[in-house]
Amino acid sequence: MPHKNWDNEVRDRELILLIAAGDEQAFTALFRRYATSMGILARKVVQDQAAYQDVMQEVFIKLWLHREELPQVENLPAWLKKVTLNESLMYLRKNAAYDKRLSALALPLAEDEKVSQTIGFKELQQKIRQCIDAMPEQRRTIYELNRVEGLNAKEIADRLNLSHGHVRNSLSAAIKSIRDQLGPLPLVLISLLLPAKF
Image (cartoon, rainbow, N blue to C red; front, top):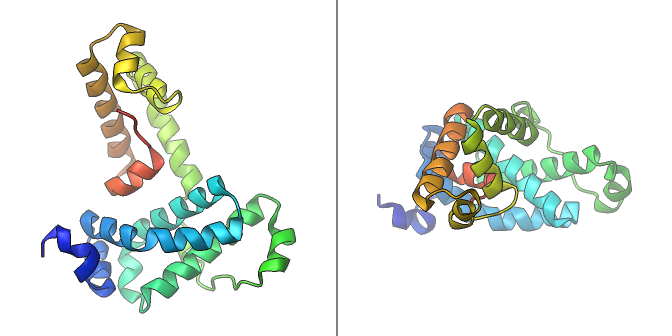
């Protein structure tokens, strides 16, 4: 089935089976289908823009990392809602706002916490930091100017007196090395973790 039809025509069940088999395009289609509605739910619970983005990263990273369990899911929207609520409440717990906000929410905790017993967003960030630290000095500098200071390739080339092509190649190599070391994460998750400005 052509990719262009996935977002509209492929049923959740078909996407689940494709994702369980490691299909990144199916994962991207599912992400497009549910990210907005789950994001609205997370934002209502955590009441903070940056926090809700962290929660959504956790939800979809864990969905991918536990993809082999997806065929057991009967109702995907309900399951995603449960995971999103759980991750939102876990975020509040970790940030000492849990007791105050939970009393006003009256939301159920997810019963199945198996989805949370794996590598989380913070651990992924630490792995990315290790990958960056292991890069050759010039590549690391280029990468950090791009990711930390938000400079695009041309601005970095001008600052470091390098060719634009060299900077673009270095950024691509940096991202590839990070992706290789992180293992098989879909591009949509890499883009969540590593917002680029080329």
